[in-house]
Length: 408
Image (cartoon, rainbow, N blue to C red; front, side):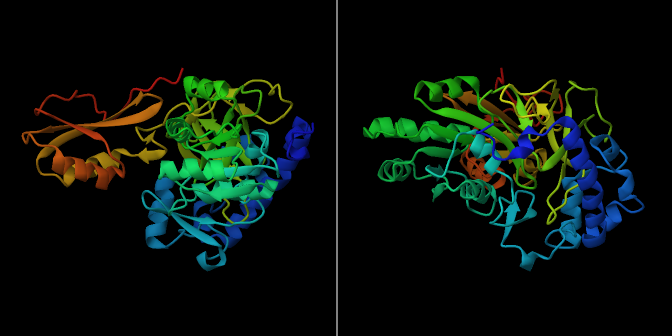
């Protein structure tokens, strides 16, 4: 079909299986030979016996904690890349800290397929509102847009009034960024009396696209689709115009397993997403994302033939994405540890006016919250409302992060 990026999206199941049967042994052999981290992690594995996603279940799971530990001993990448850091065009740092490599050519993160599904073409100017600071999100989307031939305005985050004026002056036609921030820009434009009706396409990620927000964009004449991507892997799955689940990218192999294990679940059951990439620079194999999803049966009505998943369905642990950034249980523990007056803390995320709201409840004999608010910003990397409670007030249920948002 004419709206496909290339013929890979329309392959028959048999052809895709044959291609994977050729690619997987080559990828595993490459990782064992050229990435010291994998020579240990996959010691004793015969690449010739790994010909399918089902065969991958024979291999150990690679978790982000494994990479973090390896990076602390063997910086910056822990031996999981096939070339040294100075041979990459970029090096990024994500919370943890975890370091990721990056390239700027050949759609290295495979984002062009998603942007093409959004309808972005060489005639578009894309306002890219993903961060360009330390983390790779901005470059992930920019590289995909350039692969299509689109022009990119690297706007990054914040300075909303300037974003509005630039979008108007540049006649921006497409947006890339977190789901919420486009609404922030459009609402500010309304307040300023600036017409941004030229924006008709949006490709979003880094947070949930709630149905009410998607409808608000549709009412403005904007078709908004979402992808599922990570800093480590790049694009994993994406929506098409059919908006029935997310289609797995052609450059990865997906498994859904019981959380905390490498055991595949039955088709349709919810489990943790494992990703094996076909990226020869950074050949992650059975990488545990920590995200939950499930396989959707059948084929997308848009004609793309690869496996579909239901999209993001929560975390296998309590790690939660708020305003496009992960907040992890260990960060909440660090908040308590660095404040002698706090005995217990709980982060609650909710929604208000189509935006994420973070509230931090703390048990403390101290009444004031000003010092704690500063500590929240430093530790959790974003501002939140602090509520000081008497010791013993928080539920004794083991939760340190509570997501109250509705995903229906």
